[in-house]
Image (cartoon, rainbow, N blue to C red; front, side, top):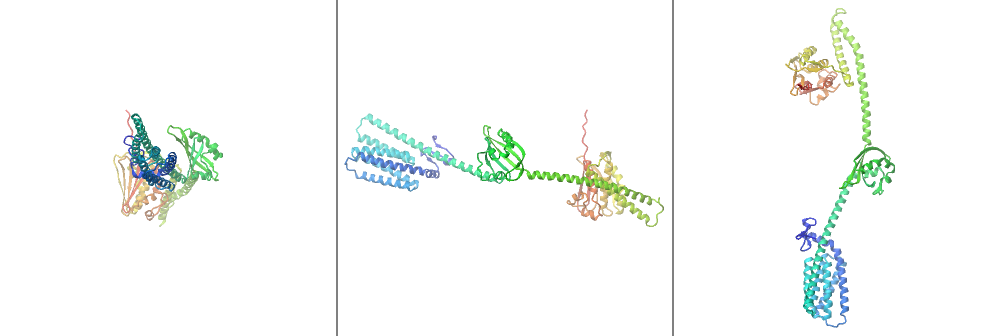
Length: 588
């Protein structure tokens, strides 16, 4: 029942006014009337039938009287009959509910009018017509959905007329008059309350029906969207209830298990997939105990494919934590697993190939160094005159042989070192050394090369520089490589600068700068790749492209990095960056 103000069933626009027993929103009230029109028509048909039966009964009861009927009462009866015919036509032809409302209102007016005309009717007719009119007005009031306020006013008017006529037509004492008044008043109030309650309840039911229909429509739309999404997923999605019955499976799952055209809803898993049921039963039972289950398995699907699938079972819990079922998803991992296997095989083959290459390079380097050392040794002996005095260009030829042999030996040593690094066999023997001292010891190795182009070698010592913990042989090899590169790319009468320093992070860096053509940002990674040369490198006289890549790998063995900064047209700076020593905490 509503409160003293109004009944808020759904929203402010759909609230029910307690006084009029109607929706406050006129549009929504019309919508309710149209919804209730079929029941309205049925009630009108029932009222018409009852009215005809009552008319026949009254006529039968008073039919023996030959009392002349007043003309106005005849007109009222004719109007009543015509209205009944119209009401029947409106119901059968399904007229708009407004026509039915109008006909019911006319019925009420005619009934009241007939009651007012009873004074001119004989005594037996008065009683019969009064009973019929009161019965019709009360029945119409209770059944028909004409406006509550209109019918309430009609019932009150009819009750007043009824009381007046009873007290006037029939001679009863004071006590009986009070009893009749109390009876009629109670019936009127009860009738009004029942009608009010019926209208409120009917509209509430209409709201609940609408809410139910909206909820069902939203549920259907959500289910349609969910099915649209899941049916286009490349994974198998299913829902199994706690009785191990399949309630849902998307298109992917139906394809895998050839379930198209099969009614799967409510069927046992054991019946749908008898071959696989035994293997999945323990995992399903774990999910129905509330556990989240992950596992992988190989499935021989009825579509003829063998799949490796990753399966996840997610329990579906109610508000009180009872397990209602579980959601299952299966992801086809066949291609991923095959790719992983192919990748592992390719990695093994690459490692084996790389190992074979490194071993071949190491063996070849050793095989080449043995005769090459003999060539260098004999050429040095001949250049020193041990085999006799050299004549004419013989000395020049011997020097060329010696220089070429030493250059070739250097390349072979680089190849050997690189192959050892790749094979993980190059070991370092660190010692505490001073960076500036190592630079000074390396400068003579490139002095002759620098003299050809009149390139100046400038080393600026840094006092109080911490010692480095490095392999001194490797450090000198790296510095000579960088110095040789810097001299090679420097212009005639250019300058190559060497500076060892400690940066703000505590790293010790050995910086070697030249004034050569420089490199672009895209060329720097190429310069650090074995056997790859940049365009400027090829113009400067070729080479094998091993120097910088070898330095980079040697720095990695020391936990450091080779950093190159270069600007086209403004030279290059190569930096050997050694990590800072960890701080030691003195314990007292």
